[in-house]
Length: 227
View 1: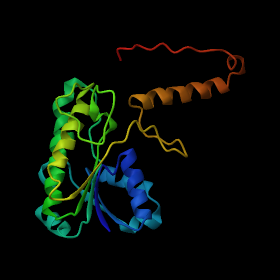
View 2 (view 1 turned 90 degrees about the vertical axis):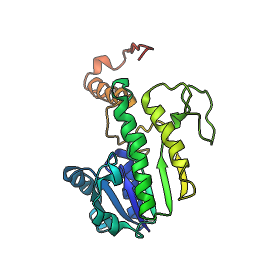
View 3 (view 1 turned 180 degrees about the vertical axis):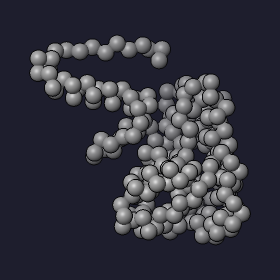
View 4 (view 1 turned 30 degrees about the vertical axis):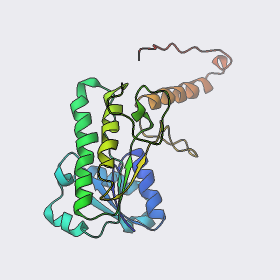
């Protein structure tokens, strides 16, 4: 199967890329620049790289910034699209950028997918599109909910947008919760939010392991409920 994948250079995207390649699929990975392409290529086992095709582009641009020639090459070739690219920020000051990538970027990939006649569209969302509701359901959550941050809000709007294309593709929406790393190796690649706390605890443990006189002491972490 030929798969077009966005967000391939992110932590989840890289794991997904490798998994799809291991299953024998050909992955066309949308990459923003050559530096990111090299980073992705170096993380993929050599024997799998023959089925990895780098396509330079940007989800924030119409048709992901792909030239007419590239779009024509993909037309009728791609079976499924995995849209995993997103801008992860909880900052109200960059809300416009968050929506530009997470919402309008999704529209760009949907329109591209429609033009190249993909059959399936798999959208990676988040478990937190429910906003401040206490219970999530296997349905679309209202876009007028109260949200904790612009990221949640943008992803909720994106889900509704994806669902509008249900007559064009076989639509699947995935809602992962907080991903803290590989379940077997513990590997993670970011210091953002919860990842930063876990990374700090790891560094503290390493330092304590070198100081035996501190290993039996109790440490308290002061937290601010407003952050």
